[in-house]
Length: 334
Image (cartoon, rainbow, N blue to C red; front, side):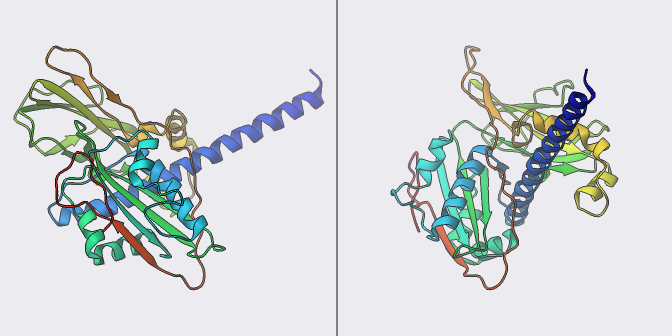
């Protein structure tokens, strides 16, 4: 083969591999941020005796899209220009909720500040500490040329017959093989069993909301799967977490140069789809043994690089809070 063609082919393949690595690094970075945001919320909820939330990719997709809309329009309202509210946005991405709440903020320099202000506001705080929510999505956008410079969106939801499990308050990674697992739905179940990865199932036992599990001591993604028997149905849910050495954790935090060879496994898993990090839940069996609907996570489509907001900001908050009346699908402004 002509040397010029070989050089061109080599350059093309190198460029493609670099682009692939950059894309996966961007996905990885975004996932870590989303999980960090979820952990921050869960730390507050647990301190107040409220169950932790599970990051949901569909809620993240709807929240991210609306964060970008808020930033572009400079109007912080729960209804968009066509009057469509959060219930419409989540249904468009396939999230069919039983309960739904939304918190909005604009002008805060970081998520910590937005969360702090939400907690200081009674309607936002009511959303954040609502024990009936099980899942969460977050969105964020930044542009110094816009009115507010930053926008933050948060969706909190619950679906019927979906009982997530949450490892380590939904952290993305851990450096310890021992993890804590919260099991939604344990209070409603008659029995439960669980397994770590592809290991053996435990015996059916009285349901517990908290589990302490030991992961295999090898770097990579590890899952905990829980089955709940509620009435005549068996519900299954899983969560995954990335077990990595303390050296890699330091690299993730930016304290050391990243070791691309050690992280190749992570990139490979991410290339298979974001669903490996944003989880799935489904009913596996009903009374007659027939499978029921499955709820599969799908890829987050947008990747946003956070910009540092400069200069003065114009903080703004808005919350959507459920009424106290019980309805199958609740959603309303405060």
